[in-house]
Image (cartoon, rainbow, N blue to C red; front, side, top):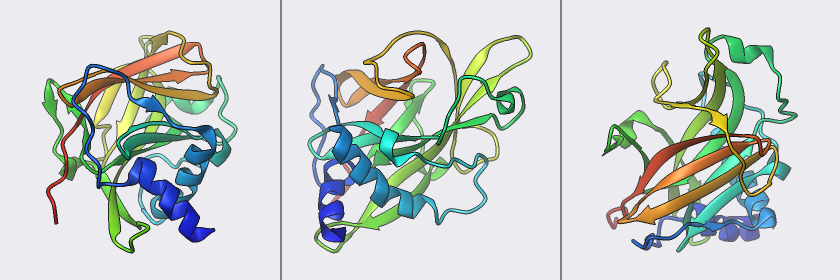
Length: 212
C-alpha cells in the first residue's frame, strides 16, 4: 500500500513532468487520488516545526488540480466552520495546508516569488528518489475594517500571501475547492472557494525544475 500511495503521489507531487504552456485550466484531481496524495504529503508537513498557523488536516476533504504529473493540493482544516473567533486576530484561523509540486511558486506584484521564501520538504517517489514539495499554510483573517483576507504563510513570521476574500461560487466542493484557470505561458490564477460562498484568488507560475 505504501508503494501504491507513493506512485499515486507522483501524479500531483512528482517533479518529472512539465506543465503545458496553454491557455486552459488545470484538471481537477480525482477525489480519491487527492486523498491518497494528501496522506503522503502530510507525513512531510507534520515534521515541520514552528509553523505560524497550526492546521489539523482533514484528508477526506482534500482537493487539488494537476497537469502532466505536476499540481497543487489543498488539505482543509478539520471541522472547519464558517464562524471562528480566531479569524479576528493574527495569525488568523487555520484554513488549509497547501502543497505545490516543485517548480510552482506564487506570483506577487507581477513577479514569481523566490522559493527561498516558501517552506519545502521532500517525500520519496516511486523510483526511490526524493521529490521536493513546496508548502504553505493558509489562514482566514477578519480585519477591523470588516474586510476578509486569505493569508498564506511561508518561512517568515508575516504572511507572504495576503489577498482579499469576497463573495463567489466554485465547483461545489466543500468546505474548500481549488481551481487554476487562465493558465497561459506557464502562469495562471488559482481560485480558492470556501463553503461555495466565498472566494479568493492569486497568481501562480510554473517553471520546470532543472534536471539533477
